[in-house]
Length: 129
Image (cartoon, rainbow, N blue to C red; front, top):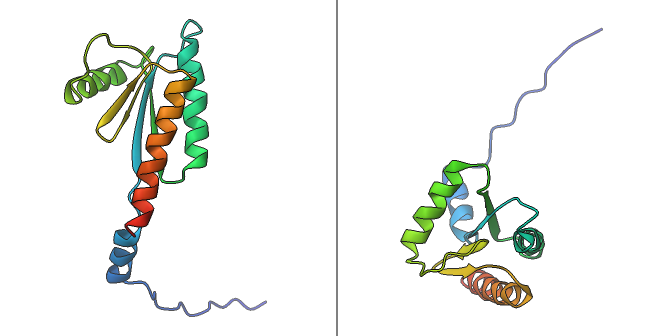
């Protein structure tokens, strides 16, 4: 039995190629969805299912879900978003933050608004390539 190793090929990708690739890719669209994991919040459950579908439809979405019933860090992050976006009372859960816009609560009509907004942002991102 003979053992031998094949010579390794030198890498052909350098930092300039990687940088050119990274700058040519459209930026991911950050979508933050804050919700409570509770049977009493049916809108939260419906909104979460909608967000999962949105992520499947648009590959440029970086969906970040923040469950607030059991995670105090997510509650704290939510308070930061409320302050940074200057959200007016009443504060309603679930809440979605995309770019400089927020959506309170969830319903079919709010889902349509979110989808339209995301579609517009994705189209703009892919046209600027």
